[in-house]
Picture 1: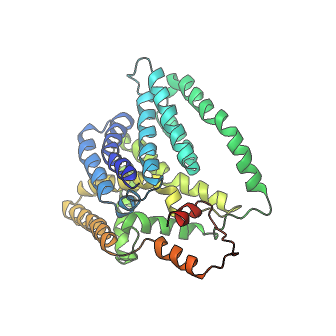
Picture 2: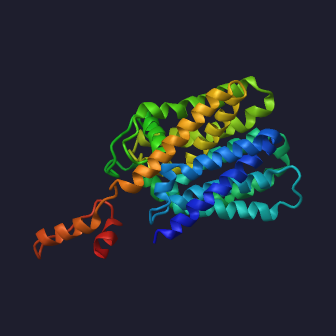
Picture 3: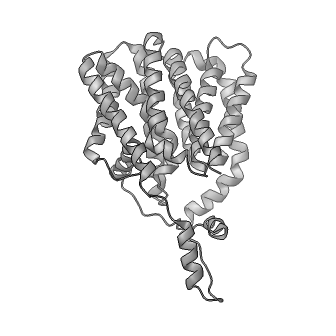
Length: 330
């Protein structure tokens, strides 16, 4: 049951490397820096306690991360100015992105990021507008029945998914803690500020570099921020936030952090090495802690307890319907 997630989670590591290389080359022409940045991003991904955790779960989150990477990589290939007949590339993009949407509905929040990529590659992307519109139609038309169902829930005065409302600052802090230290409450949240330092370094120092740096960094920033902001707007009407619903922004978090290490290193190798060492230490401590600390829910004991306490005519009610399959298993 878990190997399927392990397979997809492992595949996300080379995909992170490939995407970083192509993004830096096509969007920015940064051939000299692309190898080092891509290697650092893949290293951050491979040692991420959060991504490792969900690569051990018998759920859809590891495939969602990989499909988010693969669909963005396919879009870059379809928009490449040196591509000939792009019909096959657009088909691959449509298939990968559609699979992601139907694995987890929140992946639809990546579409504005894809639109941002198209805009950032303008005017070279202009000749690909027919393929882009065709892909958008392929995503939209099959989605309409699902969108109608969701809209009725969204506007229903009685619908409640069971989540508490999370203010935007806390929402962002939860995501930072997840990607910065994993599932455990240690190490201290203060140490996670090294990731904030690297992210801010990427976003600010890139502006002082030649113009070729701006487009890939803007795209990474859009990938990191647009889905959380859109989800927050949704939660203003219907609280729906859970950090794992946005797990697919993890690669953007690590890509930008890798850019931050590189740009800081252009000014101070000592500072860059220190930040890199601390970030990797946080990852490794998080992975190690998750491996030895009991965190997962003990469904076996829970099922045994309920079975021992319930009367023959008691009715079991599951807050999440899929929970009954786990209960039935045990």
